[in-house]
Image 1 (spheres, one colour):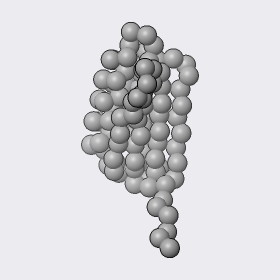
Image 2: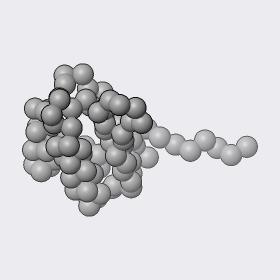
Image 3: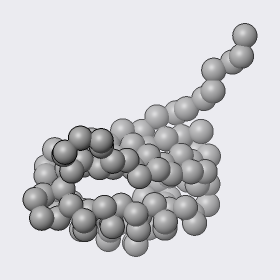
Image 4: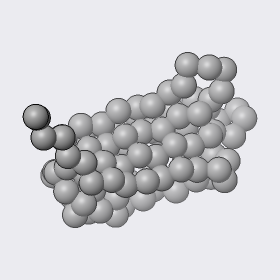
Length: 99
């Protein structure tokens, strides 16, 4: 499995739009080949930080989806309405062997 984590801080006044864009991204990604699952991330404090985790069968599936025009357009808008402080990481994931 392959995971992608993306965290961001919306600029003041853009919190609702950023959340809506993240939800649209997840809904679109969920229909792409190789998608396993995805989650919207929100914080339990007063900050507006949010993000998403997506789980894929493999890196190639995630890369293909990330380069689709609709995804690029949504991410472009997110970049315009968020602070420069962003966090994006990718991981290979495996369940530990049961002993």
